[in-house]
Length: 219
Picture 1: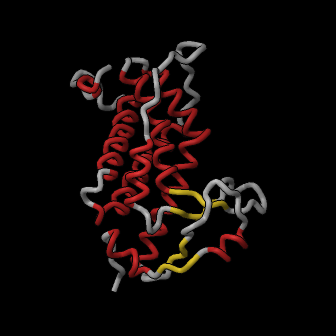
Picture 2: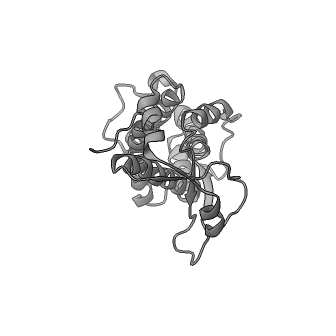
């Protein structure tokens, strides 16, 4: 299935696969456009909206019965598209707030938080979604849905959820005129505990990020 036929008129818009694919394609296109940096003032609010909408598709996949692929082994989707440029563009765009603190599993007791990057998370999610989209565009609809559902549970669902929380926190801090803890300088490949995060995190006032990101506090 080519790009031209992805939204063919003979496809049923009420079909589950079509709706999921449309939501995923919309996210892929939107984040790619944000990463171009043409409208940095609206980057964070726009990403907040797009990740929220993507997680609706993820929730539908999660609530759906287990999807079983037609073939026992996954067909070769070909080489993965390079996401390094996308990651670097997002990192530059989000530099004041790119690093955040996250707990991987809220049900694992006393699990230490670790630093993560929104730019890394978004490109990780995009890699998973693109992988499934290759199958969908090739007409392997069940394979695409299986991959999106499986990777939602195993990776991109939790990653997108963490990213959503970080983006929502940025918007909330700015709109409520509250100081925002900065994790600048932390190594996101290093497992750091809460005390280290607290000790090394600087303080970035809302005014320093509101301008570059186009956000304004509530008066």
